[in-house]
Image 1 (tube, rainbow, N blue to C red):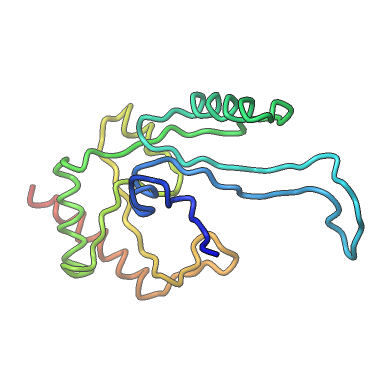
Image 2 (image 1 turned 90 degrees about the horizontal axis):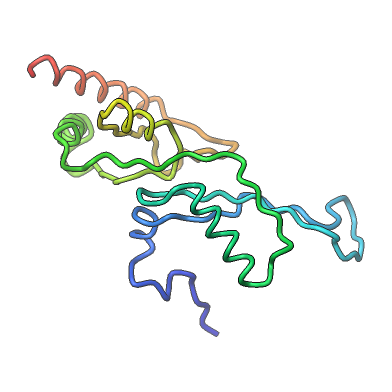
Length: 179
């Protein structure tokens, strides 16, 4: 029996989906008896915490409304939905000269073939406010490695990566001396 992936029916790749489309993640589930041992019970309620990573063109209130409509349309009118917090999505124009400056400085430190430009991050931060109200481009520069365990209990960073990240910031700032 071949298992189908949720992305099998899409007209774009899973990699494109992670960068250019919103995602919905079940962060936690709680229901029924969760203590030691076993019990045969029918849970009266269940709780799910979800998060939705938005991309430009999507707004938290609109997505919440669409999710409510989707639940109602599929027979889940009794499911309570509460928006706990929200952040507007933001993406710097990749044609901005700042992007080239950051890429060039990163190549000097990490090497020509080691720099990866991701149009947006799965993380959350204050980029929208800075971009919209200060009208400045914003980019992040990572210092992690594949086994850094980002956001896991064993999250870590190698000292060599940390120092290389500091070096990148120095090279980036020095590039402004000449401009």
